[in-house]
Length: 302
Image (cartoon, rainbow, N blue to C red):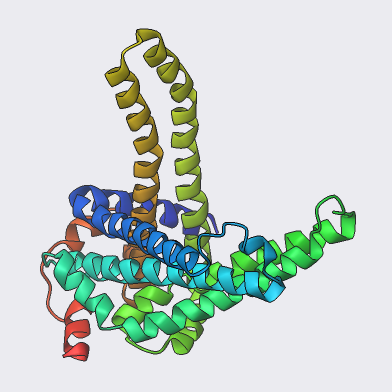
């Protein structure tokens, strides 16, 4: 177990170094976040226009109406995230095979799998809605008795388990180009080999993000107080801008590292030997090779 965890830490280190060598990979989660904001603004504006901008219409919706709204939001968020993540996975694989990834070619990989991504987003949205419904039925505010708390915790672990078994679905869709249902089954089968790596991915990147967020919070208050004491509008504006951009930047970096780590895990469990996947792989991964995964991917999709 400890050997697997140490291996996972090295893989996380490699993920960070890959991002260091390819900072352009940050464009994918950044584009995803910007696209999601634009789409949600357009959708919400259009929906409000249909009801003459009556902001209270949501409160008058029934249970299934609100559920439908959440499903649409889940679906859009998942689809945009999966689309960008698919492009990033393709870019990482290109780099690991010695190629030079471009944003255009990487997003072309995602466009070629749009149908599969739509189905997969619908599956994930449905599961998310079901878990949310169960949680809302069991966890009434002010009535969280012991048995109910235990059930809510259980369903939280169910959601975590679902995220773990679908962890490798996007790389599978990119490389093996199979359907979403088969990709979920394939990812579930690989969980036996990668459970340690996936747990470390969730915990390690999450802890790093929390540490940096804690540092940001500890510095935000004094920085803002100092800016206010200057009585300078440009300084106050610049300080607020920087304080807002720091957590957003950290979140974008975390998303990119998560996707790179996921891609490396998939490549590792499908091609590498347990004893050979160490920090030296980073140098070898950028060396040109023939017959690698990316070459097979290109031949399969030709």
